[in-house]
Image (cartoon, rainbow, N blue to C red):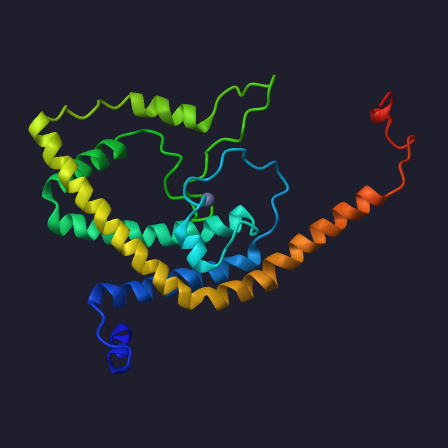
Length: 237
Ligand SMILES: [Zn+2]
């Protein structure tokens, strides 16, 4: 198997989890690099709320994708990396944390019973983003996808309440799962450092020229002579 080849390298011993993370991170970066040439600057109005996954993300710092890179470009990588962490934690939970696993199984069964699930099976670039655009003042939506999803959720009975004892035990297992997630996250960050160069090369090739073109376009339109006959909208200003 390819991921065992590095035993022959002088890098020293690395545990199997780390080796498998190496491969998964490499594949996630590959997938993001395949998607990146299709990225285009958004023409619609962006969301005002910051993204909880990307804002201040250590993963993005490790990847070298700073705040000067458009959010959609960052988000495509954040989500792919989060999937690796989620998968590792799910595996750890199923092997070591029986109470938490039982709770998650019940929640998953309840979720599957909902009649409308708009947040599922999205492409990584859209995962975790708000389902609806920001409301425009004075122009309320007739309905929103998140509103419809909440209605579908209310139709399914809630899970039975847990005893205090069960809650305490569950809380302890959630803490262990969090610790494991943090460990995996730190390991992924150190792996990502080795991919910075190809990530930055791709940003320079596919993202930066489009941003420069947008800025040039903006400068041209600001420099254009003002023609009051072309648009009456500025009358009285
Ligand atoms: Zn994001």
